[in-house]
Length: 415
Image 1 (tube, rainbow, N blue to C red):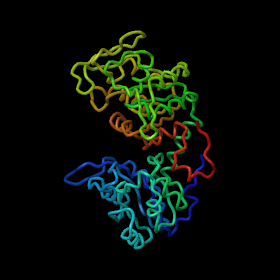
Image 2 (image 1 turned 120 degrees about the vertical axis):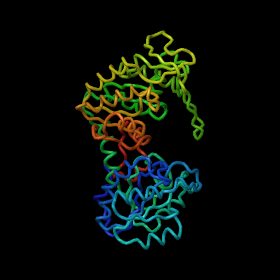
Image 3 (image 1 turned 180 degrees about the horizontal axis):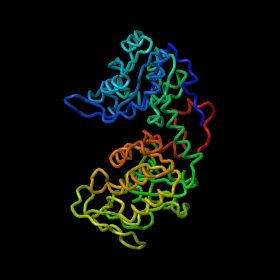
Image 4 (image 1 turned 180 degrees about the vertical axis):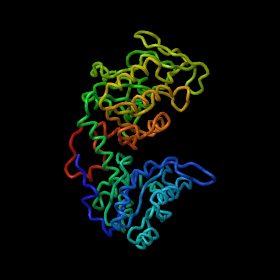
């Protein structure tokens, strides 16, 4: 996948619409809202410094969470502007909207090497419907787009696909880095190549699992993803969380994930590896009693009213051994209910095994990164993808809608 990159663009003294990946939640600290995590801002600093060194006027655009087309005070981009200013060590101006005459007036007043943060684009209802009039308004007063919003590139919004219809666009350094590292998992992973997939929902990961069947040497499963495969094998799962039927209201379609998982198991041979034991509790929400149960064909694995909460100690040892064999490994999602420290041991064991690996290791997703920070150091991994859903869709072999206008040639089939 060859992108039109920032290095090819003439950005000197131009007004740049910088589509950032700053969909970052906030928390209150000392009576003030601050970002929960600055990783995405730090990841974009090379792009922004390059633009500022070229004396470009930089206009930063992003959405923040889901305000549903209305102004929500706690979802303004003021904390993002403050964080960016501190990390860039220069002032960042701020507007109270992302379009309109007042915004245009502030953009016109920008001097070379100055930066302006726009307001949350999702305050406008037309954002999520890719309203073309809104998209055109978003590009007014700018010369070209530098797109670094990889975590949002799978969304068809006015500020992703919409703006790219109206101005020339180039990939920023952060987006370029994400695409390069994730592409390597599809095109040229060193063998043995292992995939570790966990998390609660299988719906956003099943296509990636399917795409990796012909590429990976094995796929280790945990969490709700493993629960679906275990049920597909005929295991009784009690009250474990299982995303068994997904309803896509927009497409008016239903998907039986257990049936789909059964088909994948049938064609995967022995590549998909399921837990051999589980830590279970007498409640999914507030377990008081716990025990470890072994998996056996025909056995009632999880009793009624009990739920799977983590992979067991034997599974942890098995997964650690498999990870140690790899020369390339990819992890997305926890192995259990990691938010409760009692059920985080499986996730920690997997992360520690990856951190010790001498091969290439890639991790992705917010929960995965949170575990990695607690159990190891992010510097222990070869690459940390800051995108969740976008990375999984990319690894499923899909061309992300906002990447298509950034390609030098027609998108290749990665599936």
